[in-house]
Image 1: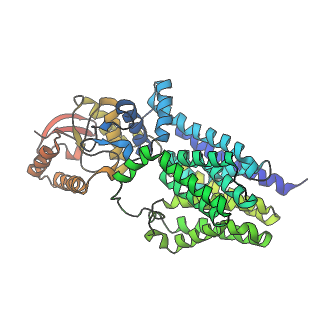
Image 2: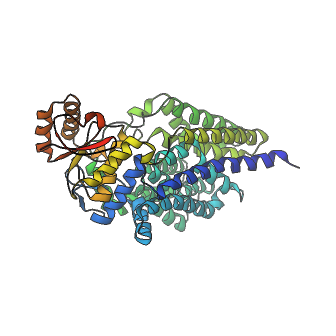
Image 3: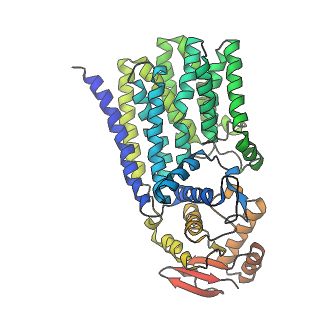
Length: 469
């Protein structure tokens, strides 16, 4: 009996069980309002239903075209589930579950590119059960997860071109379509996809290179109805975001990738060529050089982590030696424990897991419909923005701020900071001055600020509504 083979397969089932557990815990968002990014996703689904894809959303930031700032594909799918179910909470959760199903189907279709018949199953598990992906699941970065569901075919076709030096017309069509789907889902994963296409480009014949360039160009052209607005709206980004995260986010995936590539070099120097560009990416990550490079400094470190771990497993499964199998077993067990730990420290998915903020969210239901308000003082960012999402969905309330700070102008961001400091220091005249400029009448706050120099309209538990007038 091959015990190593049994342990190898068992370790993948142990690993995926942690993701299934997270999905089970996440199901609470079907019954109650979530916090953080999940609350923002609900607001986007609601805005899409109420104002359309390119309609102006008046509820936040004085009115803006929401999907000029964010890829729409995930929300279009969620919106379809919302129209069917008539339950916005269910539509978001079902979209997350659907992401896993969609990815499995795409992996199954792509299995011919991945060698052995069961290799696609292991790669599916590691793509959605590694700690970088489960971190996205726990924190609510589900549009990026949805985008990764399309990645296997892009990678598989790029790898197939490198291996066979053939680029069939059907693969050209599929590659173009899936690049479009990824771009309309998440810009981070589109950049990762371009890296795999570029790696194939480097070692292809001129004819295939031309076809790869045309495929990428067509993906930009076909999605230009949205991408043009996105580029226009993001000409002045907040800055490099690849620097967000700790050194472990750089070192661990790069170390695993280098070790995997070393094993492949011993087996096939020719196949190793395809993966050299990702060795460069890992080097740029650990040296922080990537933080200064345009385009490459856009994705989060977790996005690079997902890519490098996925490629590492692809290499290790292909190497198929005793050491590579032991390495995978060890990594699977480490990743399993990391996922369980991440779930334990996440402090729940719901807004009511934080009673003070939950009370502030519920008290806004007592405001007049279509009214404008602000939450003061500033809370931990995900709680404050969750209240704005809750208020928009359940009472159509508006705020001069919102759940998407990238939309705010520098002037508005400065005013928000000044408003908060003035409220905390009880500079009531300044608060009134700013309130008239931003055109809001009510402040939702917590009990220690309920007795400052404004009219107390309502107090419930530890939350209150103040009238600025």
